[in-house]
Every structure is written in structure tokens, then in C-alpha cells.
Image (cartoon, rainbow, N blue to C red):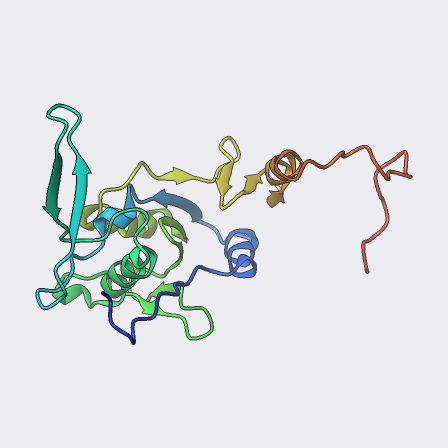
Length: 213
């Protein structure tokens, strides 16, 4: 239904880019924020008028009959949902502000990294998760523009009293810098993979020397 030339693959920001964005020492006044777009796939642009008509069949639990509906856009489970959502979000991000867009420039080496010349912020997308870095005033304006275009959850800020769980990585700060912990991710994988974390341990204390291999 999407045509023989439709590319279903979608992009997400690289983990190295996120680590660099979040962990490079902050300049004075800089902040790091996180925003989650609500039910993102359902906010993707609707199918174009010339698209092949699609229909959904749903059983009606009250009447016991089948009801048919014209499908105007992707739903969760649609093969093209992630790609259509990426196109919706990224096309708006790079659209000029004068035309109602975000006014960002996309990165050439990572299509999910964006910079804003006027606001001086850097933004990274991972499906519906957005990480952003810049001055507090500029970051707040950038988030406000996104929230005006899409239905979103509340913004969370990385501070010394508030850690961020971003893409399975826990970032936290103190007076000296920003740190990254994979403890929650590791605990989850131990359970999902059925690993015995006590098997094969030979050291009685944590490694204290640099890990070079």
C-alpha cells in the first residue's frame, strides 16, 4: 500500500552522540532537558489524498457485529508508522520558523542531531524522546515551540537533585560534573536474559585500574 519505493527504515540518534551531548562539560548557564512526545505515531501526518484507501475492522463488543472504518493515518503496529513519524517530526524541525517550523538544521553525519542557529541549542531525537542542550532561556523557548506543535509530556531537567533516565541511561550531576550509569539497564538485561550475575566472578573487589582492552 505504501508503494514499491517506500523506505520503511527509520533513524535514531547514535548513543555516542547522546553521551557527547549530555556529558561534555556544561558552559555557564547551560542546561540539559528531556521531552517525551505523547503517542507520537498517532501524531504523524495523515496519509496523502492520493494514497490507496485503507480500512480497519473492529469487533463491536456491544452489538457483537463487525464495524469498518476508513484509516486516515498510521496506528501503532503499522509497518510504516516509525518512518512516517520521523518524517513528520524532522520535516517540522527543519522547516523555517517564518513558515511555522522549528528552524533547525539537521546534522550531516547523524540525521537525528539538530542545531538551531538563533537559539544556540542542540537537539537529538530518538523516536519520541528528545534530548536538548543550551541556555535555560533558549532551551525553554525550544521546548515551548515543540509543545505548541505536538502533544507532549512535561519537560524534565538534569540537575544536581534530579537525575534523568534517557534511553535506558541514567545521567546525574554533582558539583564536579555529569555522570552516566547503566545500572538500571544492566539490571533489566540480567532479568530478561536470565543471567546469573554471581556466575564466573573471580574478583572480590571492583576493578580499580583503567580499562584499556
